[in-house]
Image (cartoon, rainbow, N blue to C red; front, top):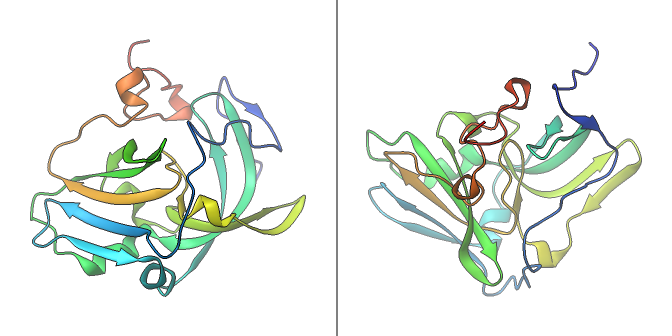
Length: 190
């Protein structure tokens, strides 16, 4: 099946936009990953605990709201759904917000999305990747765990489970809450 380029997008082999702000100085001994919000009990996991979780490999096409598309990139990581085994969600949780470090603030950046969206094999906390030009590339230690796809958050630090949606970092700055590239949903106000 031929790859489909969304309207208004351009195909690239590069990574045009990598991150906002400073690169997070990852330290395995002090890093932790928190699951909180509308849950029965908050949980905090160490890097070692996270890396013991089952791994998933997924090849996806990426379509960024900033108009670039990169086809056939393969990621290895931990599926979002693996973290659900550690928390009991309140019955009416429908959204999540993934937080990550921005300029050393663990809540500096966030990505919001409906809970059902990251339940498949294409929503991963990634630690390595490859494409047709490169064999497996580890994500450098200073990048910690990186969540990829649909709305990406790098250097993830927390998952907050929520009953109501609220805008993430880019949505607070005017980007679409949905960001569907095939519908050209780039900005909140067209």
